[in-house]
Amino acid sequence: MRALVLDDFWNLTVEQRPDPVPGPGEVVLRIAATGICGSDLHGFTGDNGRRQPGQVMGHETAGTVESVGAGVDLAVGTPATAYPVLACGECAACRGGRSQICARRTVIGVDPHRSAAFADRLLLPAANVVPLPAGMPLPHGALVEPLAVGYHAACRGSVGAGDRVLVLGGGPIGQAVALAAKRLGAAWIVVTEPDPGRRTLVDALGVATVEPDGALDTLDAPASVAIDAVGVDATVAEALAATEPGARVVLVGMGAPRLDLAAYPISTAERSLIGSFCYTAEEFAATAAWAGTVPELLAPLISAQVPLAEAADAFTRLARDGSAASKILVRFDEEG
Image 1 (tube, helix red, strand yellow):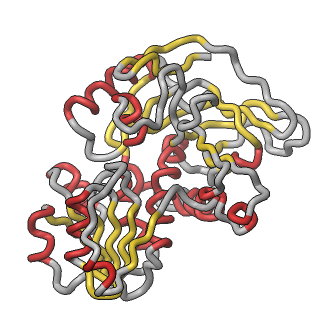
Image 2 (cartoon, rainbow, N blue to C red; image 1 turned 135 degrees about the horizontal axis):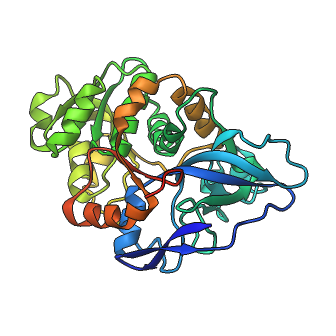
Image 3 (cartoon, rainbow, N blue to C red; image 1 turned 90 degrees about the vertical axis):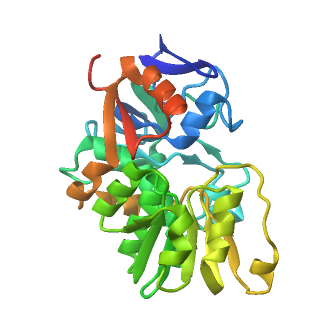
């Protein structure tokens, strides 16, 4: 099979690798499309320390079941995406349905020892295969993972009817958070984003946008929930400044490994600072089901689609010139 290999930082090459063979309880997906995640991009440049040369990255993906091992009842040809969290299944977190915080978890696309979804085929446990709704455009399945990240962040913030939600960052995760807040009945949602192209896209989703410098001046009232999809000092400070006492501030963006926080706005106003990582398996499956019902809403979230032969150039352009308005997909079912 073809695989997009991180030979070294800033260098991706297409190599031939052996086709995976499913063992008992395993499935091979024939990949149709895989999205370039921000974490993949920072792994490509070596900025985040979460990718290693020699690995095949990719965790936002969709394809069809090509082959199954013994004991698997999934039908060949089933359209599916991959729940990328691999956990022990035995600890308190796993037993409580929160495998994403299992101390022994690994993540497909992050684990350097496992070939991931920037390849023609992906081997994974059958339990991690999530069938897609009938009739759903297959490339939309590659959006399920980032949409689930946003949904989990909104759930971590307990977003509900009447909440005033401020989203920091209008990239793919911020877009997913905004859509999730709408699903959960927020009274109003405002997204701060400096890039005009991203603001235009978010506006088209029916969500108000402002430039970061103008956020405090344009809000009708302090936010009851702020969800930071960037994760740097400036955005956390903005989230604290723009929220009411007792607000929930969710940190889902991973823009910096360390943050300098003002402690008093948290302690004296009893704001809650809440971490958010990945999603539960239940939230992931629910997002896949929802995504199949809104094809018109999801279509604008794909900025471009490129064949595998152009994937390395796409990574380089994104790293040098800045991110696209939304998601770029690498297609494995198209020649080029």
